[in-house]
Image (cartoon, rainbow, N blue to C red):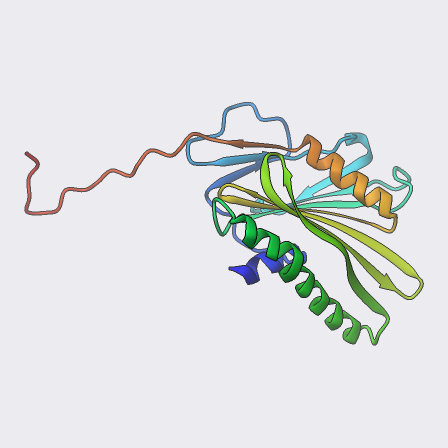
Length: 209
């Protein structure tokens, strides 16, 4: 399960939507159904952004339109099943401080080899946080290629049964940070009431009294 979390943190889409959540790009009209969690995502300035999502609803990507931002800017949301409803604080701290940076270094080493040394990835900061009231991890990485840099801000939110990865990337460090904060600020997470228990079948050959 740790490998799955690391894969999502590094931007690898996990296919297959979890039945425990729904995701929407607009304002919710009805309360979330029992046993589900609904995440509503939208752009802080809709006229500046072009939104796309994949067929099964596990990913939604916002790209700033040409000339609408000072530098190219992309914000992506990826949704998958969380490994636990309540992450242990010490385990989450270890994940933020050790496991995630280690995995990013490994990915950076692989990209450096594939690019013949032209591309490098390094972690600038990685820590735990509380976002939207849920335990989270926030990571900042820099991708360097030749004389250009790109900054990637990643937030992983453990929202009950759902794990949400929000990733903001741009050549402008300040812009990537600002976009991440703004998109998370207006994102809403709504948990529905507990699902009713499954009916218990009476074993064959017996009768209720």
